[in-house]
Amino acid sequence: MSLYAHITGWGMAVPEQILTNEDLARQVDTSDEWIQSRTGIRERRIANGDETTATLAVEASLRALQVANLDPMDLDLIIVSTSSPEYIFPATACLVQDRLGAGKAGAFDLLAACTGFIYALNIGTQAIRSGAVKNALIIGAETLSRLVDWKDRNTCILFGDGAGAFVLQASPERGGVISAVMRSDGSGGDLLILPGGCSRMPATYETVASGKHYIQMNGREVFRFATRVMAQATEEAVRKAELTIKDIQLVIPHQANQRIIEAALRSLDIPMEQCMINLDRYGNTSTASIPIATCEAIQQGRLKAGDTVVFVGFGAGLTWGAAVAVWSGPQAAVRRMLPLRLRMYARLRSWIRRFLRRIDAMIWGRHNPPI
Ligand code: UT7
Image (cartoon, rainbow, N blue to C red; front, top):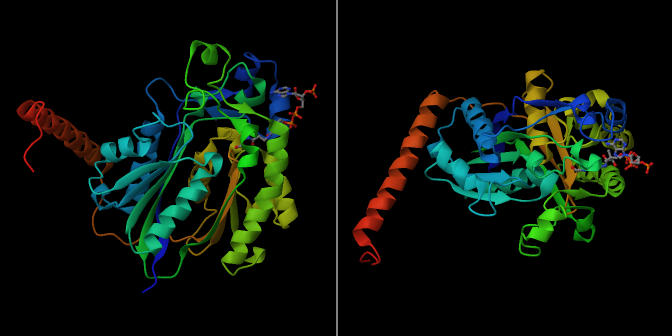
């Protein structure tokens, strides 16, 4: 029996704190006029001290699980796509797994920069289609504001924080994610890079003093690359789905720059009305931008059950990709998923597990328990 991966839940979370172009113009040599005309961005959301990649991911996930009416205990797989994980390890996905109380899920992080959500969507879909996984939670979450040099006007005007999540569920009914393409070209790795802090350049006084722990970008080169690959990836994914561009009701692109999106749509001959854009209010939230834009497209009634939608993105790596989905909507469910109860249950579960681990250590001390 063929299985399909249907998108049955979606959710987003963005920080409350807004940083406008005018605010930025007080910090660096820029202007609202320059930022709007070159990027389309008016403002972005910035995480406060208590908000992290995992807290935003958990909020978006709870909303997605609520839409899907799915208990986290029924999740088999959690993928967090992020370029701003809480740590190198443990994976942010494991923190999310614990805070959701998803006791039966495998969890890992995926790093494909702004293309990450497309990659995660495809990996989750393939896991479902193979029969190995029934329910998957795919999250794109970022707090890039913590990795941006707020004195560098080339980058600090672009990025914002946020998270978005999809629930994928197996069903024999044809639909859901029907094709995807994933591409990469590491020869362009230096065009968008955070060089410091890992094995190649461990943190030292010098790396910190010279700003190696901030995002560095060759904007013009990334711009040229992006306008080329967005259209290519879309065409390829549509062809793979055995459809034509005319069959597409909505394009949800990575929200990096209005001019990049316009150029891509022009070369695809798709009118702008068929494209979801919300970068004016959130800036570039990297891998979170596609699921956040999807949630808002649904809120605005622009994406309905049965519609064929293309997700397309590009980013550091270099990476790019696209996916075609027939929009499903939530499956009929028998019970209510209550986020507050779930949150309390997950906290208690996590506390008990830590407590038992401590007791275990006290009993066995330096000895291994008998096998
Ligand atoms: O998710 C992927 C992430 N990255 C991207 O998507 C980046 C893609 N690239 C872009 O979006 C654009 O290249 C930028 C928005 C970053 C820059 O726009 P641009 O039209 O390519 O500008 P530019 O880099 O060619 O710079 C034009 C001028 C330069 O001055 P000169 O050399 O002509 O005197 C810059 O120094 O604008 C200057 N400039 C600024 N001026 C005011 C660069 N940044 C700013 C700024 N405010 N924030």
